Length: 193
Image 1 (cartoon, rainbow, N blue to C red):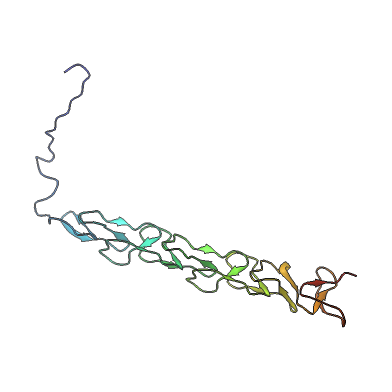
Image 2: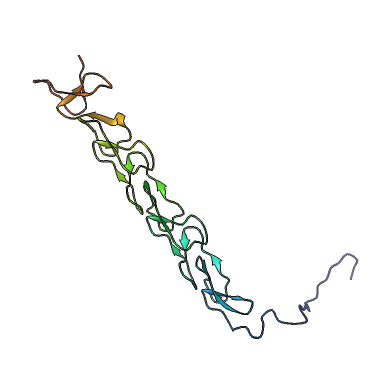
């Protein structure tokens, strides 16, 4: 061969010509298990082996495996999440958080104007008319001051509170007053004198 040429032989042998599979090894390990030095071993909870003779792998984030010998991981159901790989259960969304996804890695905080007061929520609930939620991840809605309401559901701040029909504000940032006889006071009225 010319100087600098490299050639390879296909006659490689390892460990005195011993095959990589011991003679006492079973023919194959079933899905949900792996070969571990001398025998097939079931995958631990949080792990899975998808096919015959495959290695046990961690369940990815968003999925989990609760029992030994899993051949697949379960997806986190709506209202829960699995934030890290290798988990044995899904965690319910906390108060003020929700997830409608299957296989969620995290739950989302409720935005302003909505809330949830239960664990495992799949969606946040609009604040009713006459109340508001001015923070994310709210677990309740705050009521408007006495005699006030909101123009619609899902109000996001106390500034959204307006006088109920039959009352009015004499000026901005004052309490609502009962409508004077003969005066028309639709919802949200502010007197202009």
